Length: 376
Image 1: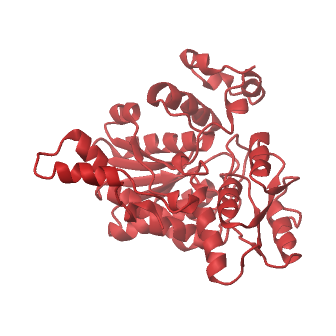
Image 2: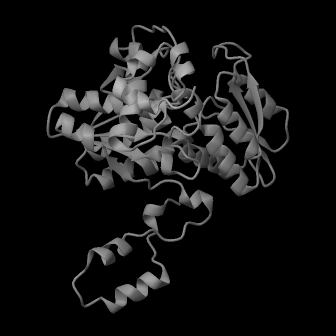
Image 3: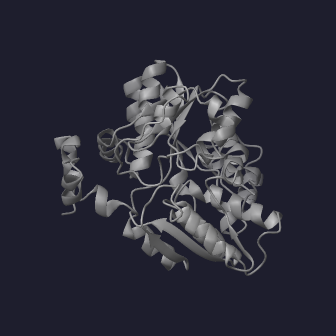
């Protein structure tokens, strides 16, 4: 299903390799030998993303700071993996038949991943989301054929929460499934079976710590579970949490305190409860870091300027966390994080002077990086 298991070569590459079989390998032939084969449709192209060394931060910390380039998935984010797994899980359990409808509540990229997967498989898609999400995401979902219902943002315990509205919508339809990304552990399984093994393979087992933020917790929990098991518990795991989420408070206090303060500019991450994806693996998380919006927005600009990476705010938050974990562990360690998506869907905010001023974040961007604020 994922490309790391199917490295078949193009005919031209096979001929080239046979001609040079007796010769010493050249950089060109080595490059060809690593080329990917043909993916079986869009879903076959999900996963097996590169692991990028963040050169500047690696030099600064004396560690190998690596980012899993999930923005290179077909739908542009890490959520493509969960989208494929929750749809496939519904198919395997007989809950979704040809021509059926997928319904989901999503505040982030899961909807876009589902839109791509559903289009490729011939399913209809209905999305409920908080009305706080960027217009760019809403427009893209509709362009991909989804019905989108932005609804007022209310707490999970409110029956009008977007997730509960999505569930009720699915219950009203025939041949429909609410994929329930927050508590459907097929989400977590996607990362146990794919992302975690990819990281282990790409680092040749030389990973010391993993860190990322969480919304559904599928990515954090799944990767943590796999890396802990394969390393015999050696790999450390750290949650990166934005303002407005309770998880940093919960983990740092040993589960005795839940404190929710403020809000964040980051979309699709932060959580007010322990999801079913997180619950089985929460005890495996070694610690947590609270990452301010000021640090996240600065890292958006730093990654663009220093690494050439055009990242969204949640990815930048993950990079801040990776830097802090590297500094905590000391030189000579390898720290991996997730580059969840790019900045393309958020450019009208992240690079807008007016928006930055409204959020009181303009001062967080060093003067020499303000040249990238190109929107009014």
